[in-house]
Image (cartoon, rainbow, N blue to C red; front, side, top):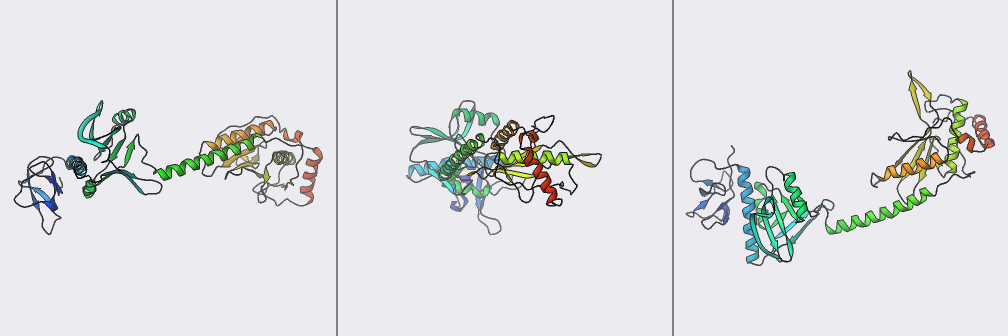
Length: 375
């Protein structure tokens, strides 16, 4: 077992004394085994207390736990007696600033090893005037058991868990900086909480605007948008005439629904949801493999979207809404990565648009030489 360089020990009155304040000729006792210790202030090792008789006492983790527990209780009592401050707080995970509050002003007493919550014994309990007690759990080897954490959660008492080490013991003389909390939010400071609430409200309002815009989508018989045509697939292979006809019909219906066509990739369409930083994409260029040969399947619109910094559960809401619009418009559609798809025996989009417009597009793409426009 590695030798422990004890930084603290009890004096004859039961107070914790730092080795730096220790005096020769005074009796000091080990925090763990209560056996006599002597201060060592040499030049080779850092100052520490050592047992007067050779041999180690109990487990180092147990000693660290007892030291931290006793040091907190003693420091809080000293601060209350001298009307000084003792803070309990945390470090905000967002702004990384320390937030700590003085507990002395409302504290009535502090106790160690007390059963404030039925079924579990708390390391430290700080009683407060007109407020529920604060519970401090000193965690050294393992975290709170799930059953204990559940009891604390149901009690409603604020619980702070700290993880002390030998180098940070001195910090406990003036403050407790919690690493975890139960029934208290130690993830964000009040300023960051307010900023988060405002951000969530703003995003919520924007999502309502977006959903209102989506619910008003309807297919118009005509559109002023011009469509860029193409006659080859993504690997440059010519499209069959009937496939191209159905793809153009799908594209026309999407334009009539308010989608815009990508200039770089004519088979991709997008619907911009402002003021959200969100787009819904409809991709017409999907095919499957059969015997290592690329075969176009029944032209089907593949829907996907990006939602930026919005909640992940907002994405399926958007996709399902636009999927329903595609179904109502007679389009064969599929939501990417969910398997939700419509099953049409044929492509109804061809029957939904002006045949003269469709024939013009088919002839125009061939006449203007768009054979090199890849999907």
